[in-house]
Length: 333
Image (cartoon, rainbow, N blue to C red; front, top):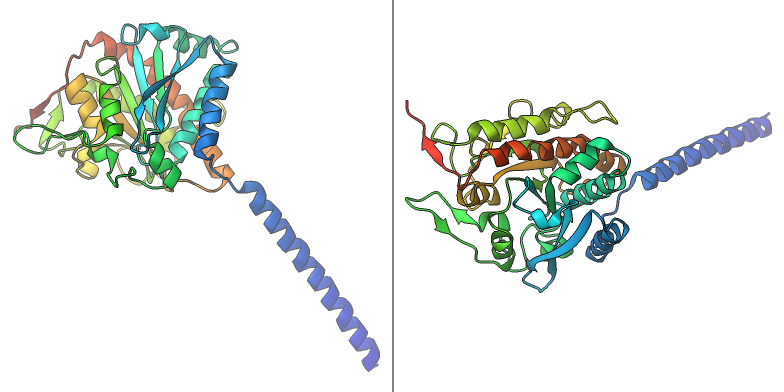
């Protein structure tokens, strides 16, 4: 009898071990399939030139400038009329001003490939590319991207290195070659722009350097229109909008004034508007700086893909407003 009991126990133990092993193997396989590894900087460059080589009629490459460590800052023109930058509605889309926020470049590279590959298939996308000049800078901070660092190779946060408006008079900063390059790259050409970041999920609009109870931008209605357009655009693949993202935790349906969130001095957003008349907004894509699951990266991209298209479609309204330089007014009580 003992022998039979021992045999039965051994059989049960083997079965349990088999179930656990299969379960663990499935978990590991599932994890590996959903793991996401970001492109190296060399792979980013290969992607940039690969897209440009595949769609030469609507994409051309350019150099914005150099980084501290002498890496090129690349731009791609998505337009059938790249020579009309500044003459037709012109949009700048910029990522990775913070080098560790790698989801921003990933979303932009995917968007470029999607738009270019659908140019001949989708009448809406063809119209957008034919009627606008879109300049995409996937990585403003290549040294930070390589080092997986928020700051550049000199340890400077580039999104604090444009112009400081907190004093009696504006104080231009521009201590770094990357911020100088963005400043000088077709300075007066852009009508509206987006700076893509990560670390939260929200659209941050003008102004960064002050609360809305103190100052409001003169072109507030245009800034609000662009932000709400982005937030409320429905993705044709998922039926979801940016403002449906459950990770949004502040703002009105995903939109907030930058200074009401927290004060930032020297941001690209404020400089773009106040000095060049380009209405810029910040889109925070993800709670994680670089989500490490493919499903999360895919989801983040789809929350934003069609919103970017809708934003570009509004560039003509901004151009028609004829903004030479931005400005702000004091809130009176």
